[in-house]
Length: 253
Image (cartoon, rainbow, N blue to C red; front, side, top):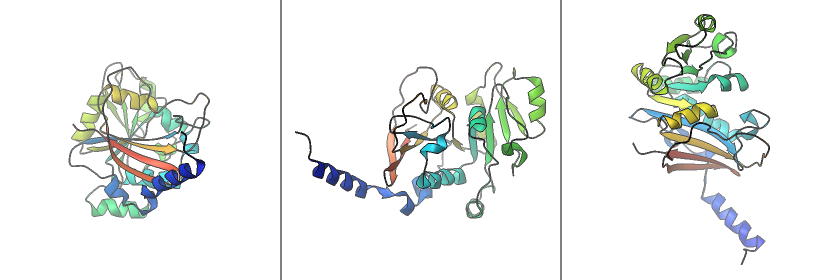
């Protein structure tokens, strides 16, 4: 027999009270740095699985999501993002607030994390703020077959790392970042980069914001790539901001 509306509302209220409010949480403790190298992925999706609204992820977020977004950037060594996401979301320079920079210095970290852009085509604008206003020279990860002219233009504003002959070798890129001391990596997408990381078995954590919206339409999912075996994840944390949920899943290596 279906639950009465009153009982359904009561169950929903009990579930909401059981959640830790993101505004009351110690976010560094909830999303910590680890002693072992870790690749953490951060995405937002609607209840029906859409990753964007009108082509951008911003239509799915909220204040609590922004708090976690900023905390994840604060604790990472490098932010890894695909060129398509840099263009679509119009990324600006990877700058942090003064308190975030203070926290990093107090914990023996550089004032700013590295900005790492992954691009096979090097279809990037050197004048975009992510490059032209960067507090630390960004890294652009590409392959040997990338266009020479674009490589030269981007070399004026970023360090170019070449891994792979005809496609970006993601495991090699991760090894290169680790060799530079960047062991706590944060990926903000896009879906094809996430899918490639899953296929290469590189993902250690997934931080997923579930936005209480139904989007419909043709919006894609958070990962897109080749089929492969599923990877089991364990729920490592859950926070809430009203009807918005923040889930952290982790793998055991």
